[in-house]
Amino acid sequence: MIDEIICSRFDGGMDVALREAGQVIQMVVVSDGGNDHVGNVVLGRVTGILKGMEACFVDLGTDKSGFLSMSQRSHNDDANSERNAAIHEGAEVLVQVTKAPQAGKGAGLTRNIGLPGRFLVFTPFQPRIAVSKRITDDDTRAKLEQTVSDFRGDEANGGFIVRTVAEDADVDALKADAENLRSTWAGIQQAKVGATPPLLLYGEGVGLSEVLRDHGHENLRRVVVDDAGMENEAKAFFETYLSGAATKIELWGEEDPLFEALGIEDEIDAALSTEVSLPCGGSMLIEETQALTAIDINSGRNTGRNDGAGGHAQTIFETNMEAAHDLPRQLRLRNQGGMVVIDFIHMDNDDHCEKVLECLMEGLKRDPAFIEATGFSALGLVELSRRRGAGPLREQLDRVED
Picture 1 (cartoon, helix red, strand yellow):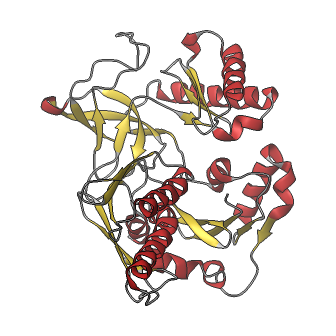
Picture 2 (cartoon, rainbow, N blue to C red; picture 1 turned 45 degrees about the vertical axis):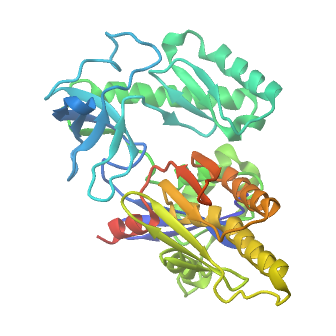
């Protein structure tokens, strides 16, 4: 569980390091301004139709047009609804950014708008009530679904997704969050009237509050910021949602830069390297291509014990276990997405294979990104798909520097 949130302001944005037991497990890189931030709701204009792909390009007011699949429809299949209005070149379209621009491509878009709050996500065009899969207790899931359904009312009022953090929230907190999100949606609708696209109607992910909303909790050890404005923003958030954590905010006052003093810069540099050293002397080689990310595990200097085949097998097993333990953190920190292929050192022992795979899967469960993974293939490879919104960490840092 994340126990430290470290935030450093720079001219034009901020860097946020999420730490667990002294290690950075995720970076959030935020730049001020721009219509193509993930989560933004934009009134765009269709600039081109790709009939063969059932998709179109949408002008967002940025350098590159966004990409929208026209095959998406809401669960409420009203052909005359705003959400399912016909798309043609020159048409106005209300979209939300789901994927940041990367590798020369524009932002990915959806018409299934989702406005995130502390406990809920409001889906104005999708009337269903859904509960996070990370809430596993059946009674809790049923209770939350019924509670939200009761104050949601008629399906015409839209739907909600209950976030994991809502598991221990009381009814009043859920209602307040829902009303705030409905108010935000009403503001978007009002701003759209008479507007000329492209126009940003709702900005997401441009402040510390969004980071605290998604990652803050009562058991945080500390939140460290190096800017008085961020300190005030954090205090306001905690006073509203997590009063017990308000005393854990620290304003950095030392001469040395915050990230350098806490060793975070070194961890970022390591995350930008293709090679990761393992404690045993082995290593992982992580290489990203346009098609996939390939990860190769090597024993390296880990020669192990000189006691025959059994010792060699144990050496390979220990190296693979260390890699399986660290791989989920590396994927999350680097924000590697799409197809990932892992080539562990070959193991003949089935029990060793099962333990390595179990270790990897347990670590992947803690990643908030949606991940689908397979077991070992006939060639001894493990394949997984990791869905991400923002681009890889390297690209995020490059965009900010540009």
